View (cartoon, rainbow, N blue to C red):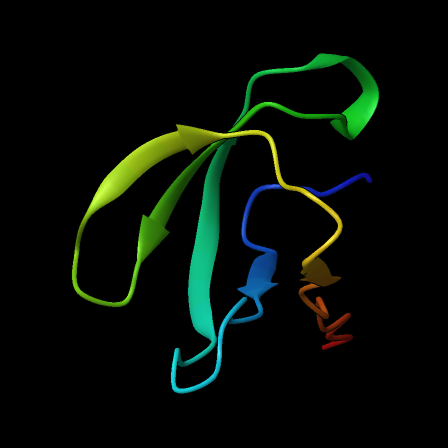
Length: 67
């Protein structure tokens, strides 16, 4: 799993009734975009995590503006 700063991690709930959670990657601590990642969840909580198979990377789309 590879991610960049600004990407979102969608962590699926593992049990019935548990909601999915979204975290923004604020720092990549591994090499070449690999885990672990320092992430910030929607409620402001920050942690270091190595995502499991229940997590999907949503890559941040960067706009190229020509002026």
